[in-house]
Length: 248
Image (cartoon, rainbow, N blue to C red; front, side, top):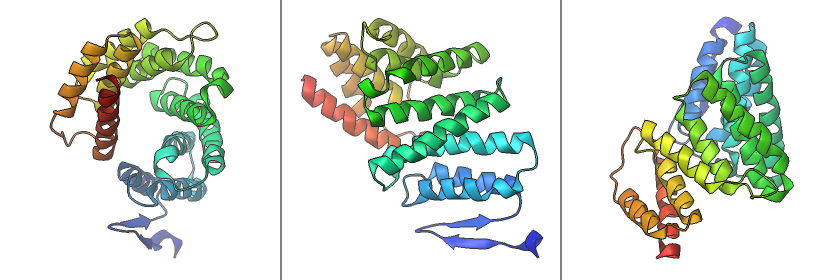
């Protein structure tokens, strides 16, 4: 019977259990996302989200699937073995579903956040001058998040990247505002590798290379904390070393 049907999909070092419960499905999706550096796990999250649609019985279920699709789509540039056009196609869907999540629950943060992150990754993949139209909606979304929760430090991080990377004059580029927001993010989570690397990049942008070098050396010597996603920390440290070599 369907109520007791369990399909087991073998992976490299783990197994994924498919069930008829939307809550079980969400747990599996989250577990796969938490191990997204493993082969095929990101593509499996996307497939599982799509296969979970038949179990949606409430608006909340729909919301939970929409923002999770945007979340997984936002990680395709690093973790999906596919062409640029294939990744962009998934990001297009991720942006669309993230936006639907914000419409379903305008006061819930995760829909807003992952919509904006998917939109930002889409912009990065396209190239900054082909995607300047993304700047304003990302900026507005981060402001909305901080209005809902001023302690959501990821929003400060996104704003820092936005102010650092957007060109001046024709957009909102402003490295001083980037520094303000990354300092705010670090005040709330001082050991997050993405924030430390971002601050170093902002300092370089502000021509404060001595401060950037000091920060990068401290970061590179920082022991790994299992609270953080190891593959992300390793990626950030690799980029930190490259940046340090460049400005030394």
